[in-house]
Length: 232
Image (cartoon, rainbow, N blue to C red):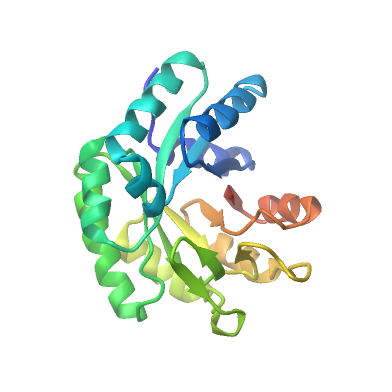
């Protein structure tokens, strides 16, 4: 078995109303830990690597390790580049063998986010690589990306519909009240907003910043349309 794209994996999750976990890994040991437990549970799993992890370990080494894991364990395994705002790094990861990437241009204006995402989709799809993008702004820290709570922007459902239809992305990360990093207080998720987005768009939705979200809230988010849950 080889590493796979997240497209079919997440479309199955959307159809059958469950979610695939995406765990941040940083080296061989964290990858082994994730794959061993996913194998025990017979669960599909996404190995998420930030640009910082790629800089540390090297895209070629991460791809090689993931491919060995895919041969060793009889479960669907995807290697995903998470929160990448540098298009050149993203393209190098695809050329190294990544099957799934996230272009994060959420700090840009809507128009800039749209244009950058569209460029990445056209390049990635020529390699049969799935693309995740973010609309809205999830607060907290991820690598060098550090967004204050006051600067967070929740995803507009109708903007999400236009964005998905025109960029042709394969999955959409939505901002509904979660944050990256450690929560100071229990997060309050906007489930009505999530339901509305899910009723309008036809691609799987992604919940970022799920590490400290209560289990019952994660379950409710999945019931409202989340198909991928990111855990640091």
